[in-house]
Image (cartoon, rainbow, N blue to C red):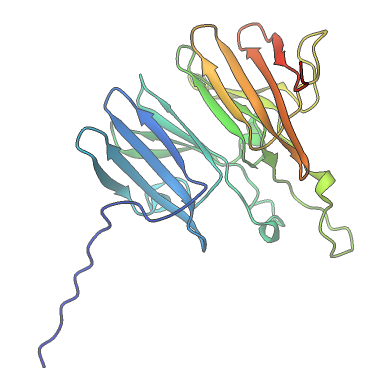
Length: 257
């Protein structure tokens, strides 16, 4: 019988997924996509979509094999348009895997678009004064000062044995505060912990998951809206944080006024 030659045709577009991230290089008209969860496993593929040609290109089927981040979902990405770098932070970790220090390290990566190379900045941002491993956070870039702001998300921590097999109660969630990473000198700093008031006379800034955050380059404020604190507690407060002065203004405290 004639032998049948099976050709493996490379995917022409990304497979279905959720919990992935996109960022855009508007100067080059390219959108970058990394990772996600396909319903069975976390993914580590890295794609580029060119808006002009309308075509996807697979940059890597496994970024971990190229010195980049491993498979993940619920992470965040920002793109520095001037220096053409993409930063990746955070990932969701299943409850059953949160039992070793190695699993719960917070790695942090940068991808250089010009050289098409990944670099691990650190395998543990918390050791540098940054956040513990987080997911469902938000991340924004200040392109002028080359600073990355990270707010909220749930931190994953080493569970200490309690002698019981019970899961931790939902009220025992730990939320991450507001951090800044300064790209030029590779430093992290905590600006505001969960429940802190960074300036006098303003309400506490409560960390959260599932919120939205934008950075306005014109007035140099982070704008934060909404989010979730507990299973049955959703927020609709709206505030801004000035990254130069540290002042906070609540545009709405979530009341009906």
